[in-house]
Image: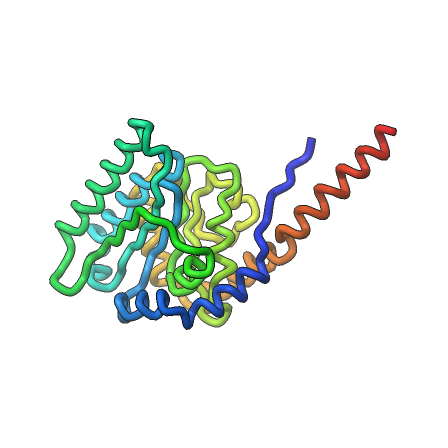
Length: 240
């Protein structure tokens, strides 16, 4: 028995993110954010993704670090799933309630702290959104891998990369050790991690990015496929 951590098509996504910067959607996004920093989350609307705790962590960030008010926006993209299951309907109700509470408490006439979108976007558009975001916020309660974490890193601008804040309970945390790792059950700890990421010096951001992108390039989806198939073939030879 052997583990084969799946990768992404790293180089392809890096190029897609570069191209997406000039897309109409990304231009609209930049114009709407102006000079504010963006925190982005992209997940299915699923209880395992830790969305309730993530929203509460952002709320705690605004409460404990008031200097971020008016300067930071969290955008969560969460296409609905299993809409016929009552538990998922309740999850959507809870997340919408928290987002509404945060916006109702902290919004100003020219700033809405949370953007909560229950719809999907194309892969190139998401790559452009990732590239624009200062923080990738990926905090599942438990996840076998989580490729969004890898996609966020691959989409970054090497000269001015963002910071990945990642749940230690995601499989990707075993590879992306230079992310800011968090316990998704610790809301205050996640808020502190967000603050750390927001004020992190450019040199440290670049060092963390270089370490993670090297891992993603060395262990991309092509390496995963070749290693897996080669071991299958070897197993067949040995069995014969």
